[in-house]
Amino acid sequence: MSTRQMMVAVAVVAVALGGGPAIGRLRRVCIDRANPHYLMSALCGNEYTLFHERATTCRKWESERIPWDLVTEEAETLRLCPDQRDAPAIGSWIKQADGWERAALTARSADTRQYRKARIYDLWGLWAYIDFLVSIDPFNQGNEIAPLSLLVLFCPFWLGLRATRKAMSRLLRPAPE
Image: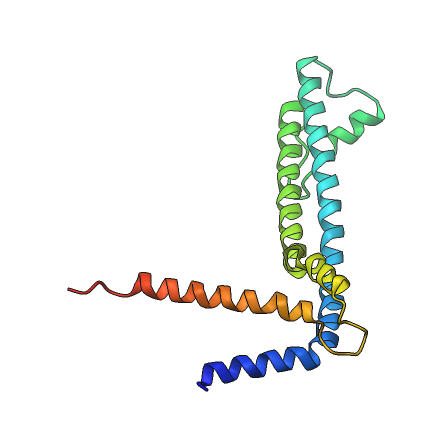
C-alpha cells in the first residue's frame, strides 16, 4: 500500500468515525458566521434602493424646474448630504442627484461584498445538499458516526480533485522533443 493510499484510508476512517459531530459543529459555526453578513447585505441593498430613488427624484425635480428652496419634508430630505465627506450642493438638484448616486454605488458595493462573504461562510449553498444527503441516509441512526451519505459526498469530491490534478499535470508537462 502506497503512502497516498494509506492517507486516503486514514481520512475515510476518520470521517467515518468522527466526522458526524465535527461536521455538525462546523455547520453551526458557518451558519452563525454567515447570518450577520446576509443581514448586512439586505440592509445595504435596501439603502442602495433608497439612495437610487432619491437620485431619480432629484433629477425629476430638476427637469420639472422645482425650486431648490421648496419647503417640504421631501425637499428637506433630498437636500441632505448623502455622503458624509461631501458638502450639500446648494442650489442644484443635478449635483445633489450625483451625490445620491455615488452613495447608492457605495451601498451597492457594500451589498455585493457582504453577500460574497456570507456565501463563502455558507459554503456556496452546499449545506442544503449535505443536509439532504444526511436526511435520506437510512444508515444514520444518530449513533455519532458519519452517515454513509457523507462518505459518498466526499469520495467523488476527492476523485474529482485527483482527476483534475492529473489533467493539469499532463497539460503543464513539457512536450517531448
